[in-house]
Image (cartoon, rainbow, N blue to C red; front, side, top):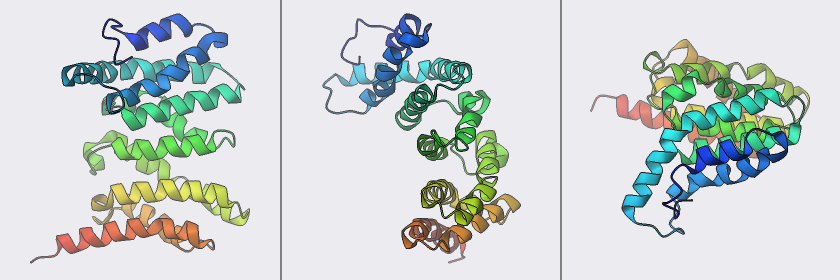
Length: 238
C-alpha cells in the first residue's frame, strides 16, 4: 500500500469494501493488520516524503480503525476465531502506529483488551495488546494521563486472576499476566518509586510474581527491579 501513491485512502477503502459483511470482513482484516508495519519497514523502498505522508495517513486513520474494530468485536457474538483476528489486527496497530492517546482513552476497545484476558481463546493475543498499550501510554504521571491511570487500575485489578492461576498451577496464564505486570512496572518505574497507593499495589503484584515457583516466570520481574533501582539511584542527591 505504501508504494501505491495513487491509492489515496487504502484503509477507508478496505473498510468500505469488505467491512459490511462478516463473510468478507477477513479480507479487510488481513491487509489492515500489516499495513501499519509498512511505515517502518525498510524492505519496502519508497522516498522519505512518501514514507512520511503514509505515516500521517496511518495516524489520521487510527481513530476510525479502532472504532471499526470495536464495532465488529462487539457485534460478532461467539465467533471466537474472528475475535482473535480482530485482536491481532489491534495488536499490530498498537505496535506500529502512533495512535493518539485521546483516541485510546475514549474508545471502548481499550477496556475490551482487559476484558479479553478473561476469555481463554483471547488470552494470549489480549496479553500482547495490553503490553503494547502500556508501551504507548506516555507520561508516567496518572494525574496528567487518564489512559495511564486507567491502565494501572486495570492491571492491579488482575491480582485475583494471577492468584487463581497459582492455585490452578496454570503457568501459561501466570506467565501472560506477569508479562503485563512487568511491562507496566518497568515502563512506569518513575511513577512506582513515588510511593503512591497505585504504585504500591503494582509493586506488591510484582513481588508476588517474583516468588512464582517457576523460575522462568519469576525471572520476568528482574527488569522491573532493575528499572526501579535505577530510578532510586538517580533520585539520590549527588
